[in-house]
Amino acid sequence: MYLLSKKILKNSNTLLLALFGFFLPLSLFFNGNTIVMILLLLNVGYDLLKRKSFIFDKSIFLLVYFLILCLTFFYSEELNLGVKMIVKSLPFLLIPLGLLTTSKVSNRQLNILSIGFFLGNITTIIISFIYGVVVFKNNPLPLKNGFSYFTSYVDIHPSYFSIFILYSVLLLFWNNRNNKDFTNFKKLIIFISLIAIQLYLKSRAGLLATTIIFLVYSFLHLKKRGLYLILLIPIVLITVFKKDDFLNRNTSGSIEDRVRIWESSIEVIENNLLLGVGIGDYQFELDKQYYLNSFDHGINDRLNCHNQYLQTFVTSGILGILSLLSVFTALLYRAIKNKNEIILYFLISVSILMFFDSVLVRQHGILFFTFFSTILLKYKSE
Image (cartoon, rainbow, N blue to C red; front, side):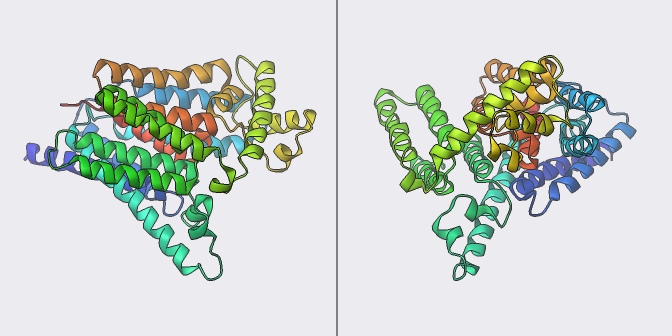
């Protein structure tokens, strides 16, 4: 009876992980992730009642990051924003706790949750497409222009959705790496579809991450002739990437704004190097620096750092950035130790996205980073 209940609990955990992956791209459209987190915590509570041991692994670095964010609240003056950001950052605490009694994530579990994540992204595309068709007569932009117009109904930024789609495809490739039915023709079709959706979403982060990851993949796996062929991909992407008329985006203005934001962020960091300005005060301090630098756009739109490394440094200083980098270090160590490429590809995807945006102040970014970091720190390839 005990073995039966243990098996049911394990299967329910796997199903919950798959549901979490499914709802990830839809989390602002329908927040099923909160329900899943509560159910995972209830499973942990049941395990602890049965006196099952809990496991402190390297996912504890996520908890340390959350703890440091909480500590910065005590020297913040803007308490309302501080509370809001701490509540938004709760997945750093709840997701590791929800898997506290899970000693490892197996290939089977990763495969099932990956299917859920893949289907969630497909569902998001279908919902966005249907919305575009319905409103096409009055508003043709969602279908004609792609980019944020296409994803506006489900309320996900194209850069995040682009990375989500990329990583769901990488998980699909990884989980079928020994499947003979997963032919090169199928891989090619999926790869072409991936490139097409990346170009349609017009995300710099997505295009850059796709290029770098497939370069790494080609270097690790393809023979010399294949390597020369794959090198054509970034050349094509960079050529397209530079053409504003093709992307229909004001990339020069966007890049100029980011440079000014980063300059202001660095100036704030220089004055608050050790502890940062606090989780509640980062926007006030940035706005003040924008004013000193005559950057009206930054003040009017209350722009954050648009770079997670700078954002963490501004908010929580050296301790904060070290705690964030400790998560990356733990993932990299696991990737190298276990020769696990899927962890490496996650690191590349997230690192690039964090260079372009303050990922951990957005719900999609927090959920994606904490969920897959926790899963991959527990994943053991068999």
